Image (cartoon, rainbow over all chains, first blue to last red; front, side, top):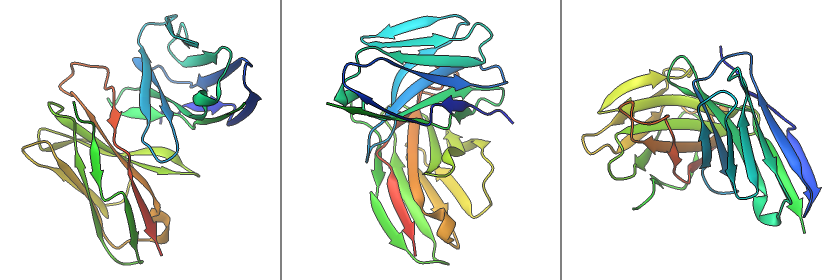
Length: 110
Length: 115
């Protein structure tokens, strides 16, 4: 069974701080996606990474896929209250199903 | 382009009843997936339909079933409801057909409460 563990589970920071969320597995994924979910809504796709070592930037968000395609990280620079939400990584494994991570709940205070 | 819509948004049922949830995908998307989200288990895959056929299935009991119509709209049914079925049920659509990295576009979900 392919699993994706995210850390930390909860993160509470002040506006302007930097943070990193990790997504780890012992399995290899052909691609990995990051989503953000706000209360009362469904997850929204932020980015897809497909190549080992790939780095993608989305404004203040930087996503990295591990060289072995088993892990990924999301780094947010100068966090803002609008970044508050549940961050989910999701890997496409050997069964073509998306496996979602355990989630990281981020709260950014003004 | 209109997003994924789900109806109803909220539902309250009692144990033993059954429920049907509906999902309309983004126009042109042929794949519809269903997920269950709970605080304890996170987001878990229920099943995926593509061109009216179930293409993938998660590890849920047979009380959970679904179908997809020719216009790609999908319904999910849960029979003999249990307290543990209380959750947010999310529908997601994607282009499918092996053309993308299975990128999912989610609806707002149906919040099901079983009393």
